[in-house]
Image (cartoon, rainbow, N blue to C red; front, side, top):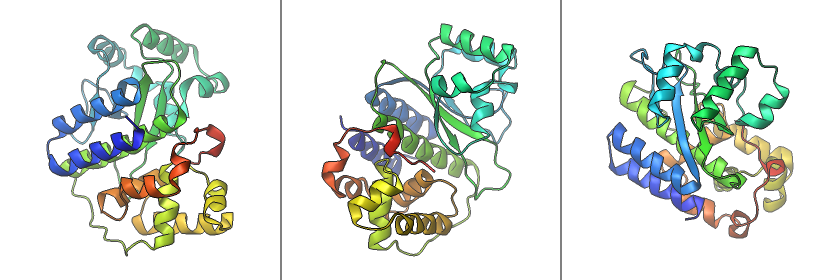
Length: 266
């Protein structure tokens, strides 16, 4: 199944189902269809003793969750610590080759790998319009060695939608009714959803890179979000952008190979 079909199916499910449990199950099905085995979309707290306002959604092995909680590994988990220092999604293997780890952090990663929690990809979740919200992120663990870059980007879209949905069931979110997106803003945002960077969008639309950047930043400001993917998801949620728009926008580009160099996620 193409990744945009997976996203469309998940969002349609969310629009017709109100239960957190059912949407979490659907999220698991979606990431499995994309080639991932485990996920953890969670507030950065004790997974077995979370505060009332925490969100704790994962399918990690229960034995690992128990070990993680009892040893209070969440207090120095390098994945959580790094996620709190960046807006940009990251691959564990690449990041932690350069990021200085303490011996306890190295042991944590080694122990996690014994449970199959390894080679992960984490997207920080920053809901900036909600003051005081707990820091959170969503990590996915691949079930196979090679997964194309576009599927990782799809998991960020899915995770942001899931987190917004769950947050809305627990916290009264402020009403944000932005003005209708312009045609050009919709074009730019559709290409952002494909994982395109400003320079690539500029080439596809015949615009300058600075003009593309202006359009995207303007949408982010109007939606009160900090990342491009949050802007994409909220535009899906409020009906101003559809997965069909994404697929139709320069349709040949969604079938091209994805690569890190052409991706801009913040």
